[in-house]
Length: 305
Ligand SMILES: Cc1cc2nc3c(=O)[nH]c(=O)nc-3n(C[C@H](O)[C@H](O)[C@H](O)COP(=O)(O)OP(=O)(O)OC[C@H]3O[C@@H](n4cnc5c(N)ncnc54)[C@H](O)[C@@H]3O)c2cc1C
Image (cartoon, helix red, strand yellow):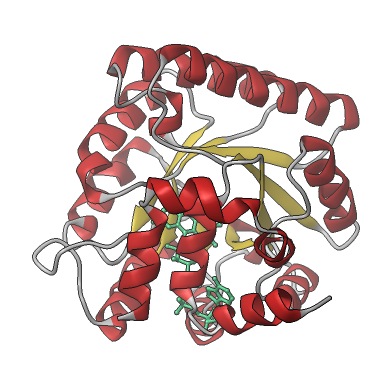
């Protein structure tokens, strides 16, 4: 029930305006992001690189209502990419299509995405498309396929909680895709997504095996902090003699840090997703919903100092 309340809060505009003003909320969010500015994210990216961890950079925000807002988002990412190039950092960007204008006009979102893919291509970096709620899946995959036809440096996220995902994965593999598999972070009805966590976990494992079988023609990334699941995936990779450097684990900044370090030291590819920007409220509520025990952390910050 708590998960439902937190996911509901993530879509509540009143709360999104009010809560971020409180200092204790700001303090609590620090656990998941180094700061609101690009400079904070890039500084942390340099630190991560010392232990062989790359970065995924994401500018927080979703569902823009004006084309001008999406232009600003693109410009921020272009500035970020310029800084990444200047400093030769191992950073890729991860974007939401609704932040690039998908709700306004698909052509706008496509042209914005192309601008980012082309700029990233010049640096030999990938652009990852996040997967948002289920109403966006078809449009995200369509746009992914269209842009992927012209550029190899674009990847997409698939969610194991969706009943449709095995079929989507099969259609993407012949494109030599880059796929990040995650469990899924949105509130979805049971006819669309598995309601039970153990079914979501098993679906993740089955999809992961399929992706490992498709190596090296599919770039394979697993976005999870589930240590047991990661161990099972590693075991499958070992069993099938897969080069560890081709198996990538992507995790959120501040979560599973010991696993991140261990995996990188063991020769797996590791990327840490660092979020920056001021629009962190819905994103933060989804992080709390993933682990309601995090609420005790927020409460502690509330009563600290
Ligand atoms: C790199 C990356 C990109 C993502 N992109 C998307 C996307 O595009 N679309 C989408 O729907 N979802 C995305 N997600 C979120 C994802 O769907 C899950 O909601 C999230 O990863 C939690 O699931 P889990 O696999 O870690 O497993 P869980 O079973 O939820 O968690 C396993 C363990 O990880 C730890 N943990 C997990 N979450 C947290 C947390 N918030 N705080 C503290 N500890 C935690 C806990 O110890 C927990 O027991 C992404 C996740 C990652 C890591």
